[in-house]
Length: 344
Image (cartoon, rainbow, N blue to C red):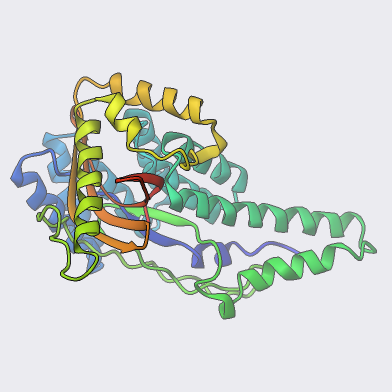
């Protein structure tokens, strides 16, 4: 039984990466125009506009990223792979290009390469939840291949068919929204999922190209706390998040690390000491850092709070905008971080 690669592509959805924030307004206009053309399916016009911009600014990460998405949506898989591979070399701190490579490799049935790319994305950003989710999807596909091979070698093995059936049920249409999904990153600000197909069906229909939404990040800073009994608590939690971002920007490691609770579990199964050392290297080693919080919304439930916002991160010439979520726990009179995730 052969694994159906069309079923892989039906599980692909688009994630967003916006890197235009640190550049001149004309660049924001150009990237918005290209994103709009992408969203409306005008790929030839989008490519022409992207190439024209890159002729004068060949190193621009935002437009190069958009070009990779255009190539992928145009069916030029090899060219898209080359574009995203070069982006990982030039901007190794961005997890999204690795994520795109994983999707492209998965669509070709190269699941080992897809797994390696996703592991690089997670190593770059251990709190990148989308990459973790996608890696689970790829592992499931690898398991399906291994089980099929086991049946070829020993058709009498009664333990294998139930395992294969479980994987196929996981990727069946009835489980839409309840299974892992492999995600392509795009220079936009919304994600959309394509309808899944059974993983074992050789006659699965060819997938439609996932849509791209191009909405630039909005400008307002911290949203005022809502009126009510939790107003003071929400305001205190908001102030804790903003103070954490300020410490990060100032490379004040004492205040930055103090913003994390003893209950915080570092991502990637790191020890707390290893995680703190890694954060020091990544933060103190930068010539300059700017972390801004947009559209901050905090919900308080007793001694716990959830903060959702758009994070504008700038380090030197690199500028990335991403959605982020912090979970906080009130300890004494302070709100401390117990979990953080991004890319969702």
